[in-house]
Length: 383
Ligand SMILES: *Cc1c(COP(=O)(O)O)cnc(C)c1O
Image (cartoon, rainbow, N blue to C red; front, top):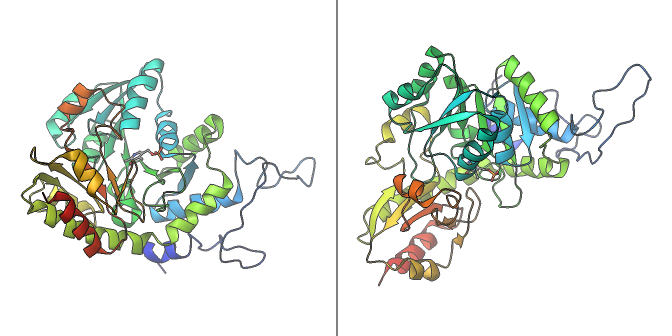
């Protein structure tokens, strides 16, 4: 019997072969052990050292593999550890084509660390097929997507990029942090490796930093396993447990947050102090149609630009509900200022070119009462 992801999530990824065998415990045991006793000289058990494998991590990795319809999942100590470990599949002399709207930390990794190993890159507007095609070189090995992208929620047509990549013999990686496997399943659309900052919606409580990678290709699974074990940026057993606990409530959290985000997007869209709203659920969003084709939710993150008439400092200080902080995807609403937060790693000229003005704010909607949130923004925007 096939199960929906909602059901799999509620059971913490427990499915055949992964139910706790000894006691039937509903929650997975946390195996706080770096090493494992071996019964015989010439025959070792399933586990030898926790960098290479840990039963609590195994449960999490099996859960994310199942949720993304992959064959293998890998848990890392952060989203950036997952992303950089996946990019370590590249070799000196390789080239990647990457969306210019990529997460600031990924921008930093690609521009400042990969270049040290002579792995080159070209940034493109991923909404423009011709631009992607033009950027592909004979040594291009990976096309890297993020959709919806941060912070302007630009949408990439996943299937089109996958087709282009296949024509040119490139792999595709996709950062699926904003949609989660509940609402976007890139492996089903032909993407080779799906990446997550599990710090965000998957864990959902602003408590841990974690990353995940999933593939459904045998050879890529072997290579990712090798990098995970060799580079060693694994997620610890306690955090694996905490992430699994967070994931159990992903569906109700995401549904509520997305429903409120839709209301808030409409509110901002009609407000005379707001210059522009960026949300793929608005019909006016240039990527709305493509997003609806490849995802089942408009998501819980939106951005908006204040008019010059609004004092941004006062606006932030008048708000009483959202926390003003970096990050997203949590039970509490989080208001961010991309120019000084998520994209601070990007030079200001690059930032301006990407449309990330100082008057742009990103809101990750939490699970608070929707009327409370609306009223809070209403009063903060009033003169
Ligand atoms: C936060 C984030 C990352 C980085 O993840 P960390 O867990 O902070 O290392 C990568 N991609 C996106 C889209 C993010 O929001």
